[in-house]
Length: 389
Length: 100
Image (tube, each protein chain N blue to C red):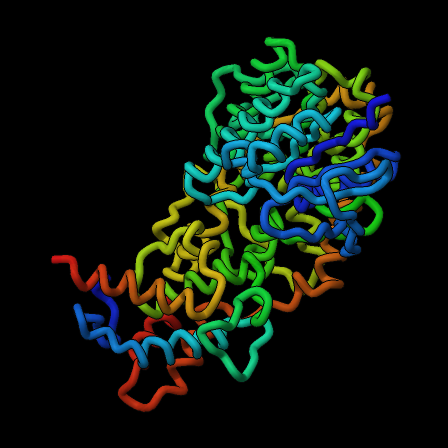
């Protein structure tokens, strides 16, 4: 008799990874959670997952393995690496940098080289490669317009940023490995946001930073089309698709699954729903042809460059992610209708005071600091800041 | 670059005490959860309540206060304490002053 094999989940502290690890352990699997620095696993609802020590968790439990997908042998010593390799019966690869605006080398190292390292782990396993569930993104489609099919990857599209390009190359590596005999399924979430029933989200990143910048009036106009679409998908649905792909791998193998919303929101939907909230500024959408970033006031320009510009391309795209294979595999799309779901997300943000109670902006803070300086101090630069806001 | 009205940081004349004082005041003023006692070891996220977005705003504030151009997102991520800001500023202000 051999011991039941473990499921290795990379990126297990991430908002999707931790939910997947929890679902797999709940289904009775012994989960090895590959974690980088942060060793605590916190679910999207804020509850901490209990973990067990040691490299050999029992079924239904989770043990953390400290490692790093950017290091040789995942940062493990040779003996630990070999033991891991022979003990895992499946890999769920969630580790990725999803923030925008980082240096290209960061995306290369984590998203591309990290995926290559996970593939190398699988391919050299002594009993043959274990099944792999690879978490990609629907935005490997880059700046494609129209309908994107699940089986399509590289059709010569342009990418808006290093993140999209890195995830496309990572998925390309997985597909090459599949051609070489690795059994794999690929899940492509769109923009991961709060939970279906509560709207709750553990980390306010990516789209939430843009939402805050816009609704607090830090940036008041953006180049955008009302008809552009943003695909927001609840985190629980994404975790369900990834976990199902692992738990029902025989059905999922060879498939690429778009874990996306039932239908994308248009920026018109966004604009209308934001206008229902009295504390919110609603950004003015300017046709991109006439938008000139140089005409923004200095401080607004800084907010724009640092936060909003990273998403600029998303405000002009009209894209739909076909999810026929996912609907067949899961039997369902995310349950909420679009506008009610957006309201639920915003209500949660208001309730936990992420939105609706802005802190003073940079101009106000600097002006206050300098107005309390002694006369003849830094007053002149404070005036410059006030004039810029 | 030419609009800065505060004392320029010439090579070798960066007033470390004054810079520290300005950084502490700014980190406190921008903080979501200001605390009275700020030291070099004060952590931006755990002690002062900064989230990723407020850290970006802090970077903007530092750029404007110290007349810097573009603190990168990677630099923002790598600075975790008030002392880290001081070290970063001493480095870039020193470099800027050393340039021809």
